[in-house]
Length: 227
Ligand code: SAH
Image 1 (tube, protein in one colour):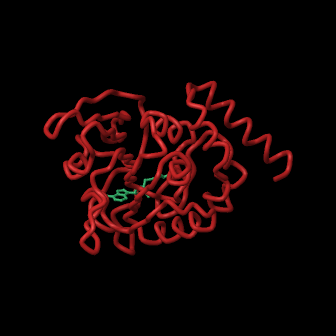
Image 2 (cartoon, rainbow, N blue to C red):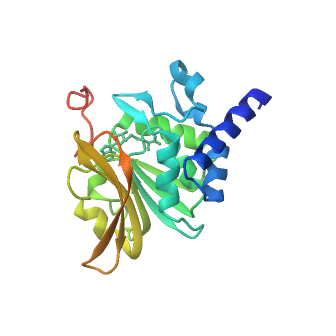
Image 3 (spheres, protein in one colour):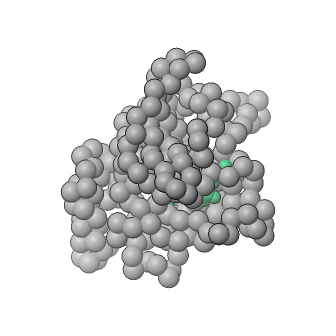
């Protein structure tokens, strides 16, 4: 890493502190994960700026502040098993992988999922399991094995009204889920806590703008995704 690159990383971390990220573990993970590695060549120059960037197939890599806020809100422990919906390029996954025991991540665009999995393997982040599927249905039972319930769930695409019931079902009692909720007229990042089998409490974190959470695996022609 050259001096210029180190400076860019330090500048981003200082920017995040300034904007309200106080958890030192989260700041450490944000400094460690090479964001430039996750973005297309055309926008590499902006990789260390605090802004969302395009990653192809009409999707975006989230703004670093939003990644850090969502991660901080989950209050992760290194014992946590985490479910992530919306792998995208895998950047948020990489940040989480430094802060929890194991992460299961789902993306509905097969080409994005394959590229993200390759990046995560190249970075030797071995506590990640990635899957191309519809994350609204939660993590599927595979070979007779259930990974649910999860200690924490993070959704990085916006639910129209409420979080999918299947995700609430897969959350451990006492577990937390962070998810943007709302439509084109505005979304709010919400933190849900599952208090019992039937009750959840919710807290607003910040206004955000995410791509929508959509059902099913994306068709190859992407017809439904292009705005
Ligand atoms: N987490 C990414 C941001 C991804 S953008 C980051 O680190 O920057 C949101 C992603 O959610 C998109 O790639 C989109 O295809 C995906 N998505 C939307 N609905 C989904 C669903 N039902 N299941 C899985 N992924 C979904």
